[in-house]
Image 1 (cartoon, rainbow, N blue to C red):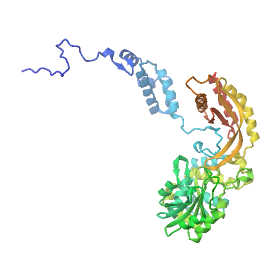
Image 2 (image 1 turned 120 degrees about the vertical axis):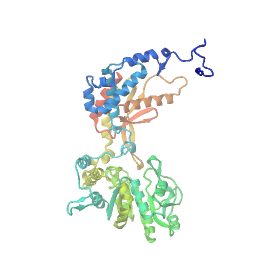
Image 3 (image 1 turned 90 degrees about the horizontal axis):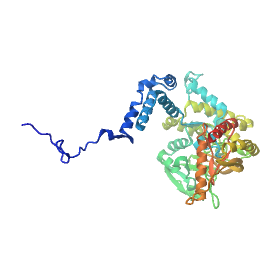
Length: 508
């Protein structure tokens, strides 16, 4: 017996007079376009191979490589297909070239730092001197004596490239270097107090950038934190009472990224060192900012130097390479030779070690300190910090007409006095007199439902975005609905002016 096809419960048979539930193919949509438009778009799009053989494709392939160009062409065709739009091979190549240019643009780009923060963590901290840049390039270009002793023909020690200079400049017996100051502190704690206690004043339990907190770093280093004193006052007797059989070391953390004022008390490093030594304990001081010279020589506020900390009795001092020292990112440890030797034997040290490029740059920077009379002229960080206020004001007067033309109709531009800060956890309350260009948005007043403050804030953010969109992004700061461009760190005046001409043309 012949079987009849089974019909769905609600699906009418072809023999019935009910409507056919299957959609009419002519009514189907694709990406919001009608089926007819989508088919027309598909019909008007070239094949990938045809695009890759079109005029101009060879140049694109020579620049980016065939694989990337092919992927970009496919993506451009897919975008046109979704829109139901036809295109010639040449138009697809234009789309592909734009997409490839965006893809291949480096995400880490030079910027003009006009924030007023000289050592800006998010903008790379200290700019390097030419000597360091040349040394890094030379280390990248060819094999080097990174861990090779030319005299003996045997394996050498990479830290030897900087340890001698660090000892010379700080008075330390020995030194080693790792990849940043947090790593330096972890290495010291893990080596000297693993499974034991570390005593710290409660007022020094700092948090550094990225929400990394000292107690968490200590826990990861394998030491148990013992807090003493209070947030604003800690005495020597607090430390003495906390010392016991499980104590591994006493730590002092320099509060370089904030200041506690008023009714305060802190134990001087020399007294802590003496207390630690009476109990046979090492005393470690984390200076953070890494000053190797007394900044008062150039009229800047005093910041404790590594040499001062060692002279006061610290057994080890940890500090940064890319803050006040003015070098590449690095964590430096200077102090007693026996303790440095213990740190060097810790397996963690290999995981935290510095590569040959940064070692070469750091060594070049340290050599500049051998000639302190010319240091401010040769070390960019110090040069920017000591830049005369009258020089910055003169720069602002020169730039004012060009900036005003570039932002005509968008903002009124004026010269204002301002204050720069050192930044990156160095001298947090010390401000430097500077001059800025103030860009105040112009245009219609706020809507009836919108406050004037909110309107100015939105307009200021729009101006800041326009500045960030330049080929060399300009990074300022917003205060009270005004974009401030602090000129302390602007040295390439010509490049800045060239961009303004482009901005003026785009605005027009």
